[in-house]
Length: 195
Image (cartoon, rainbow, N blue to C red; front, side):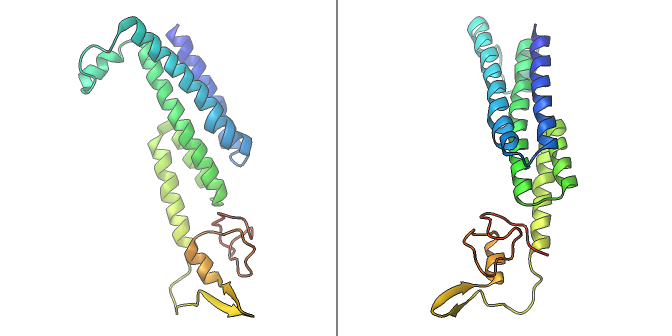
């Protein structure tokens, strides 16, 4: 029976991950299905199994703060399957965030897909690929050092921010600014710099 639980939770997660990798820009997938619905179902399954095992067996025997103690607790197939579901849940939440963040930042398809697939297969490695990739892309988008450019000027009594100000700010404010350096223009939070 624990094997069936394991197969069902894995299949559910796999199907959601396929959708996330293929359609990371679809809000219903990255913001609802893979960020709330599937992780919520997996979390419910986890809570039911752990609650059932605690109710029937009591607290775990031994010290769960040691490898030997954890090994003893995980020798129960149900507890092991529930622990795996714990990983499936949090990896999917992280993957959904990576999908939303990489689409919002306009990250290249190859980098986004590699980060998502590696998050599914090796959790922290995919997350690391994403944060390193986004950091490198942000640095590449920064203007090259040169003479200090003015950040604003006044025109007809109004304060006008320059492109240098917006680049220093790091993202579009969405206010329809004349010198918006981001593409698409006037989209709040956008960090993709026009070439």
